[in-house]
Length: 363
Image 1 (spheres, one colour):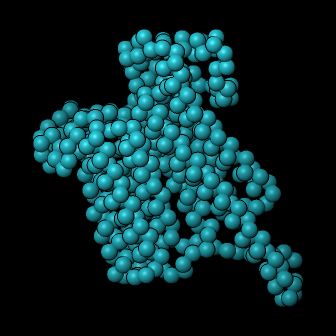
Image 2 (cartoon, helix red, strand yellow):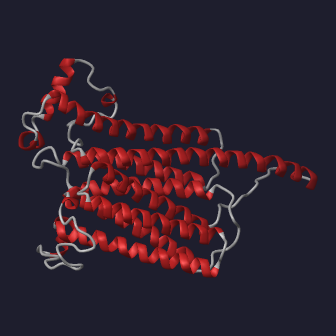
Image 3 (spheres, one colour):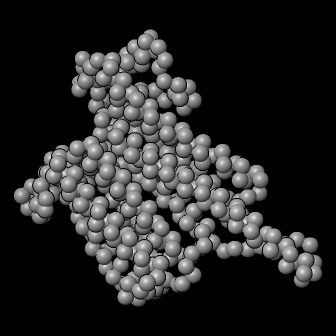
């Protein structure tokens, strides 16, 4: 191939590759928006104790809700068999059951919707050659994680159908964390597909630190899931003291001590608070360092944006606690946690730089 022919191939291939990257990135951002929605609806499902209202897992048939009085009565009779109804909601009317049913049905419908929103465009982009080779394993991994998440969702619900009146806090926290990882992975890939500031990170340690902050935020989301699963936010509703002290007595009171991190209300709320303070301090130090070493750059701006979202989230968390976890504030707090994660991903991905742009020409 002559130089002139190669130049013509290059000038036509680059715009095509750019268009493909634009549409793939837009699709992934839609997936991210869906994950935000399902995390919010999932939070409402948990707070309204609606998650056990549908006692069977029907991935296909379950899309269709009860359409007749007889079908509603049949669904209600299944709910009456589980401990949540027998011990907590005995005497609930059919109208009250419908309220909790619709929350769980909406949650499951959104989960199915995310599967379709991810899988169908993935097949299209792949089959039409719009995916660059390096994207295929990344996107396949996200699809696999989504499939695993579906199984985890039912595994979580199943924990509350026999011996409990609610779902296991372990499984709830796992379910929330996997959803957060799906969002993080989708946003990470999407952010790598856009053109960005080409300036290098302020220091060689900037990227590892930013990834460490992402890991801390994911850990905090997991801890928040444990707090929610134990209803630990409904007690010790004071701030900045907890149980009358900044560092209360009787921490890690269960045996073995590590079990307190998952089953003791006081310990898990204390650890959740301390992790929030740690994230606050570290993101502030990180933002100041970025400002000093790379003032006016994309890196310093997103570092400050991350710190700002952490500040807002801390305030929301405090208000939620002091108001004894009203649904509106609790949902805002859960939504805010995912926003912090998204901003942390955007910041970290910006430090790594964009994916390479290669043009392949054949003779």
